[in-house]
Length: 200
Image 1 (cartoon, rainbow, N blue to C red):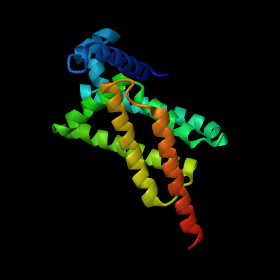
Image 2 (spheres, rainbow, N blue to C red):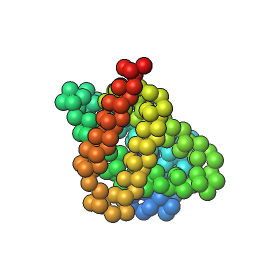
Image 3 (cartoon, rainbow, N blue to C red):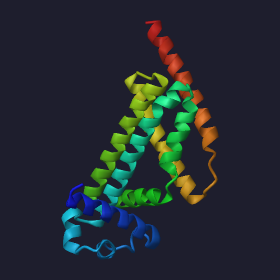
């Protein structure tokens, strides 16, 4: 790992810890530079603003989650248990409350007119919708682009909504029941789609 990369990783790790302890708004770039033991200039070399830093924490975190999910997918597919796959995805994407707070912070910044961060936020969400749509094809055999696109958007909305509910009221959501119900619904849709294809 290069020195630049090493500094970047240290900055992101320190920022996550400080923001969890002090809150995002109360954590300054000077605080983060001090915690890492670097100058503010070095920090600015990597991140032009706190928003860019938060965005990269989220991007790295979610990329890591996607890699973990893809690594576990073959095992769950072998066991032919789509509900378990959904539950694994929901758990991974909702169990880190600090990440949910950072995501909400960026959403708020974007809504309030920060175009740079809004663009990055939207790009990331578009990417997750595509990843989810691809996984639905792998797990359930959904191939109709309209269905897979709509389901990708719906599942991302469910993940965002569940993360928010868990943040506000931990223990209020039964992921087992939600995963089982959704798996049954998507399986029925996949079956109907398959029937349509074969009767054409």
